[in-house]
Length: 210
Length: 403
Image (tube, rainbow over all chains, first blue to last red; front, side, top):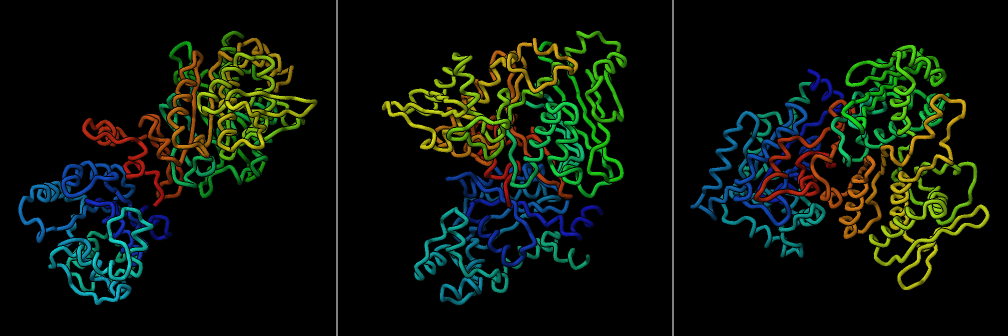
C-alpha cells in the first residue's frame, strides 16, 4: 500500500536488477529501456572487467541473485537474468546454460529468466531506428547464425566501431539511432518484454491502474 | 572512540543509526544521498559545544533556522543528535543525546535537553532545560546523580573530546599565505576550509618541532620530491614554503591543490598530538570543569573527519596515503577517522567493515548501512576470486552507485 502511494506520487520508480553474461549486454538493455520504458530504472550487475561469458555467469549467477535480493528496496523490484541462447553456435556442451536455468528455476519466485535468440544482437538488428541509421531494413534475425557478426558488418559498412566495447558512452555512439522498436520484428524480444510485463516489471499496467 | 551515531529529524536523516563505528569509517553514496548532512550534524555537535552558552541557538541560526535543519514532511519538531563512545580505559559505553525542540514553529530552538547514559543506565537527564544550557551543569549533575566531582570530570572529559574534532570539508585548500585576523586566531582546531593551516604549522614549528619535523618527513615520504617544509612568518603574515629536492624553494602559490590538501590533512593529524593547553580552548574561565585544562589533550581520543580526502591526489599515491591514515589510527592515543569518497580506486584500500553506504530510501530519507555480511561473504571473502571494495562498488554489489 505504501509502495503504491509512493509510486503514485512518483517517488518510487520501477527498478530492474539486471544481470547478464557481458557488460555490453547490460548496456544495450539500458539503452533499449531508455528509449522504450524511460520510467524503468535498471540496476546493473556487470561482470568485472575482462571477465564474463556464460561460464562466468553460471558460476556467479546465484551470488548475483542473492546480492540483488539483498539490495532490493521494494517487492516491486524485479530481478532479471539475461543471456544469449547461442543454440546455433554452441549446440553441444550446454552445461553452463543448464546451470543458469536451474539456478533461476530455484529462485523462480523472485527471478525472471530471459533468453535472447540467438544472440542479443538480433534484437538490435530488428530495431527500425538503428537499421535505418545503418541504411538497412529491420527484420526478424532470431534464427540467424551469429547475428553479432551481421551487426558488426552493418556497423563496419557505415564506418562505426564493432559492438565490443564495454563503455556506455562508446556503445551509445555505436548504436546511435536505436529507437527501441525491435519487438516489432523480433519474437524473442517480444517474448522477453511480455515476460517482464507479466511480472509487472515495466509498470505500465500499474501506472494505468493508478 | 565513537562507537555509534544516531540522528533524528536532522535534514534528510529521519531516523538514522550508524552502529559499530570502526577506527576508520568511509562513507560512500551518490551525490545528494545525505553524506554531507551527516557530517554537518557532527559540525553542529562540535560547534554548539564549543560556542558554550547560546551555542545551540547560534549554530541553528547559522544554518538558517529551524526550517533548514529539520526533516521536512514529518510532524515531530524534536531534533535528536546522539553519539555513543567507549571509554578508552574500560568497556563502559557512554551515550550522549542532545535534543533540540522548537515551539510553535519558531525558527529559534527554545528547549535543549541532554540525556547521558552509561551502559544503558541513565546517569544524567535534564529535560526541557531552558537555554543557555551549560549554566549550572555541574551542580545539576551532582544533584541528579550524587556523583563526586572526579566522576563528573571523567564523564565530562569525553564531551571535551568533541571540541577537538578536526574537520575538513569537501573544498578545503589551505591558503597560499595568510594574514592573521580575528577569524583565524583559534589554533587548536583546523578550520573546515584549511584557512588557518599556515598559523597552525607556524605554531607547530615554534613549539613542537618534533611534530613539525614528523609532518615534514611524512610529506617527503608521500610526495618524493619534497625535501622539507618551512614556515616563514613576518609580522602578521605567514607563508608556507616547500623545499624541493633540487633545492629550489617553492612558495605556496606554485604548489598544487593536491599537495596543499595533503598538507592540510597532515596538519590536522599532527594537531591532535599537540597539547595546546597554554593556548586555552575557546572556553570561558568561569565555565564549569575548567579543571580540564590540566588533562593532557594529546592523550585524549581524537577524531578527524575529512570529506573526499583523495580529491586531487594522484591514484598512484593513494596506497601510501591510506598507509599514512592507518598509521594515524594506530597512534598510541586513540584516533579515529571518518571519511567520504566518490573514488572506487581509493575505496579498494579499505576493508568492507570500514565502509558505510549512504542512500535514500523509497520515501526520500537517508539511510546508512554497512555492507551486509552476506555480500561480504559472497564477494569479498571469496578465496578464488575475491573482489576489492572499489570493484564491488562499480559492479553494483552494495549500492551507492548512481543510476
